[in-house]
Length: 125
Image (cartoon, rainbow, N blue to C red; front, side):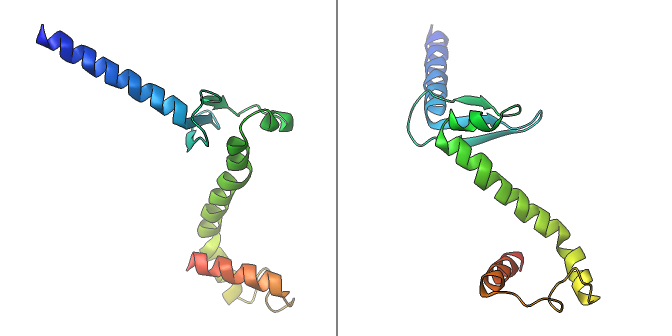
């Protein structure tokens, strides 16, 4: 009889945990193999699971702004940092060979470009 009570308590705790998860997180399907989980702004049952594989631009405006901002700004930024890290050696090699791809000798940078360049340089180093 005691094992039945333990099983019911465990089932109840799992149910409460699942409800709390669905209230606090968006599960976003971005492609056939990847899911992203982001925290919601408010505790609601809206947009618990969102499949964005076939979305068009209008679809982004019918869902939570948190999802839209994540997909437009946060996710590409992380991919950009990974891409920059992967290409870092190739870029350094081109700059050592005075390649025109380096750009520092053929063009003067504006203060804004120099600031952005220094910021990216600090991130990579």
